Image (cartoon, rainbow, N blue to C red; front, side, top):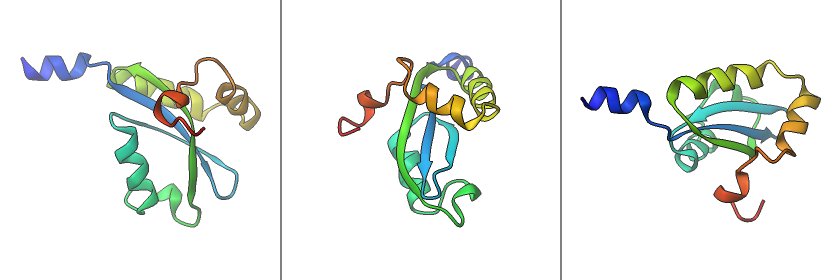
Length: 101
């Protein structure tokens, strides 16, 4: 029963991090604060070897694990300019996570 509840849970977030080289890293997590700490502590993705995370610039929540993975895939295939438009859109929930942004 617990397995069925986990697979339908909608607490996954798709996020974009602005990196020190001005690139945009896209990922998913069920705990954005923890995941950002991992990236900053070099415990996250290999992508951050040679570049540093600057700040989270985009968050889209309310996903299941499956829908978050699909959305991450779609965002990763956007052009840089399209990602910038997404970051400035109303879909971005980042202010609900970090009030200073």
